[in-house]
Image (cartoon, rainbow, N blue to C red; front, side, top):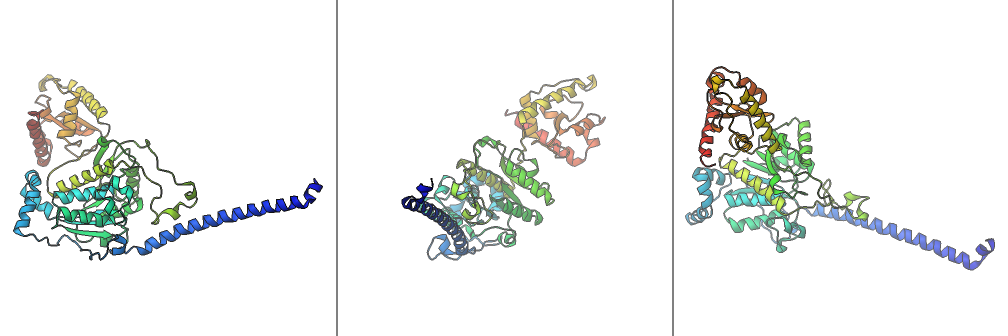
Length: 460
């Protein structure tokens, strides 16, 4: 063995192998360092290049005109001919919402924060519905991957800021509209500026958790009406999309995190959200490349924003956005809608019908005896269509029951009221008429809903 290593040729070969290994290690380390440095330099240069006031170079458009600042009081000027065109353009909405409702809608000012797959569709449908003053806020640009879900994304707009792409599309549809396109990153520090101008509604379409909570907190504290989009990524069932108060959400991980964080800030309810009850887990986040896993933050253009790719069906963000837009336009126009908190409804209908049957068994002959003629479908109809999933007395959505409104009348859909179990137990024990026990407001409300049921039942 000593003779072998004493051989000059072996020594040279060993030295060459060692030198090659060292050289390879140095080259690998150098390449890795350079790759990381390039990612950091790219992030730094991107941040430095963004003029969040509206840099035309960032927008990818030469000689970009200065952005118009739009507020609630920005004038919208139309000639008589233009007004005639707009009235024809919005004829179906005038027929649906009426002249007064459309006047409110056209006089409104809406801010959409986040112009991606959800926000772009929400903003587009509000514009098409008659909203004439819209501020859109987003820092990002249109990419090729945007084409599967962004309402204004085309091959020609790739590389342009999302808000500017939307503005160009909007002005093709409604040239008179006042569009405030802000290339900006929303934060707690910029909230007072970006949400200024007395907006009638704010649509939160942000996908970053910290920023979302900051926006919702600001709106709640400043009494600004807001609706928030939860996670549309990794969802595929359109029948599960719901609108509810954040306190009534379930099954959705983002809703759960937002609810808990708002609760820590003292906000328990009063924030309306669009979310999906579809259980997660069918698909997973797309993993980072092996070379990116050690320092994933270096490959995110902006700090604290996600790096991994969320699989998205392009139709689902559009549904979220259209649901948000529909809710906002009906609220602005004063058209009454009451979204229901949906929680395992079929099991609920069966339970409520069973409990109603038990209540009816206890009826004495003096009050007609047990006369339950309501099927499970009837129970669901009363709970959801007539009482909107809420107690007629307290507005509570949990532990609901149905019972007779007037004890001396038969138990039918036109004499059926929704209450919580404890409220129904007390109600069943009253000896007089409801007018003797409840306030005039509650009595009027119940009678109004029962009259509504009589009208609807003619078409069932």
